Length: 252
Image (cartoon, rainbow, N blue to C red; front, side, top):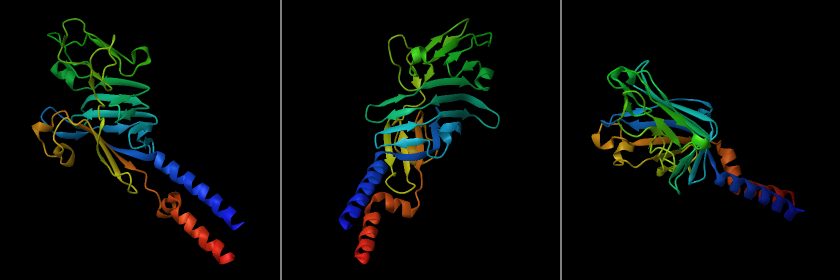
């Protein structure tokens, strides 16, 4: 009977341990970016993917459950663009970012200077935006088709999710190309995970000082869901088995 109890508890402990190791639940803290001049800023975040534990990390793949809206701002009441993704998945092994959907929505600032940030266009002499874009072409979140109209002209690639899928998709500048793991502290209760695009020196992540060398650097910072110490010990299986052995030994 004693051996049976221990074997049953051991099986539960192994299950808990493997489940815990398979994926850490996280909460997004920062969706950060550096401007063309190297100024550090963070998007204003909203959506169901900002809920506690809405993200999962298995050591190589980061995935979100729900919608994340990230607003690139320029001061009170001033917005540049908004990146909206649903069920985003970042694979640091393959170097890919995918999602169920992605859209870029234009803010209220760039139109005043004759530009469109999502489309990367100049509005021409009439200051009228006559261009457009189709996102999620054929159900592919990495496929954007831009159409330039009127006297608008291109100033670069349209903004997209990650990297163009090729074929009939336009080349894009990805908003979420954070494919590299800068640091992974999720092995510690409540630790941080930082992914970045590696587009500058590491100081671009460790400091917030304006630095032209950091232009274009982006990052995601997430925090592992804190687990109460007793549950953490229970999940490891070690505390559970130790306690069981002592109790069974005392009753023998």
